[in-house]
Length: 116
Image 1: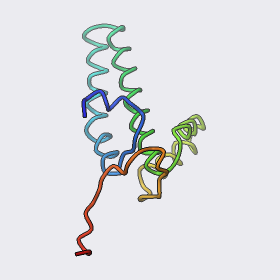
Image 2 (image 1 turned 180 degrees about the horizontal axis):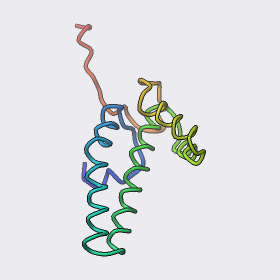
Image 3 (image 1 turned 90 degrees about the horizontal axis):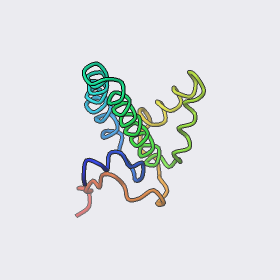
């Protein structure tokens, strides 16, 4: 798995991996956006912002896939407050849900220690 796979909105993403990317990756990406804009100028800053946006669309899409939803649900963010709240509840707070196999294999295969 390469670093570029973080920018591809296909596959699935567990809730823990979703929050890890938001708590570690997003602040780092925002720092790079601000630093590129202030140190290098408007062009590199816009490029960094575009890559950050692509990263976020990828993360949210993969989490929606893990919840059994299409990435088209990201359009709910266009509804000012209610859409964002619905996405946060659906992706960040709710537990696992049976996802369609069309989105790929489960992100984490946990062994079942109860069976011998």
